[in-house]
Image (cartoon, rainbow, N blue to C red):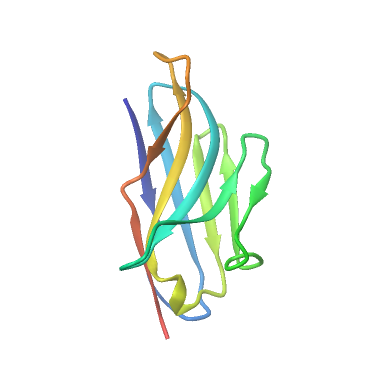
Length: 121
């Protein structure tokens, strides 16, 4: 069994910052790619940032230069530092990780429960 637990969401004014964390726990053998997604009301879930096991990162243009993803492989944890937040960043943020458990030979995608980020104007 694998769990991803997110923390760090909340309410912030435009221009402010928040840092999200997501820790994976359970019978983990290896963690591959990790990432953050978000879903605003009435919209589809969209990728926000991704990071490979080797530390390569990717961002969509909408957050490039404002958001930074990082990970601590010793803790199976991924972080998202969000700066210069805008009202349009308001959404539920989900973490995702590709995980191989000790009982499996394959990697499967797991999702966190989501954390609300609200940016006021």
